[in-house]
Image (cartoon, rainbow, N blue to C red):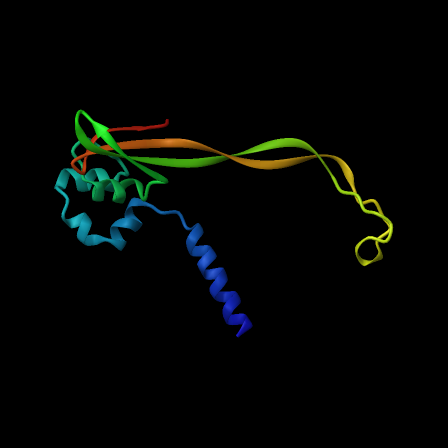
Length: 143
């Protein structure tokens, strides 16, 4: 049983780390892809977005957004999808711990104190897509 749980956990972890590509999303949802025009199908296969595309087409091309926003643009209900990534940044920080005599498990040491590197992940916006009436009105993507 323990081996089965370990294998299942490893499989789920591996699947969650697998990169999502337009081709993978098309295979998972072929009916959405088939409903697109030939022009939009070609764009989706290239991972590109253009004005007039549906939300389904954008999902197939770029995947699920990191965040969505609803609002108003030109007196029409609009929606914005933001796509985010994260960058590792090295930070040199002071760290330390100290113990006291008679501490946990009878510890009599003072632990470690010093400077050392840490890694923080800083989020950044990769791109955004604006929809009006569920169609792309505008988009932008970082180069």
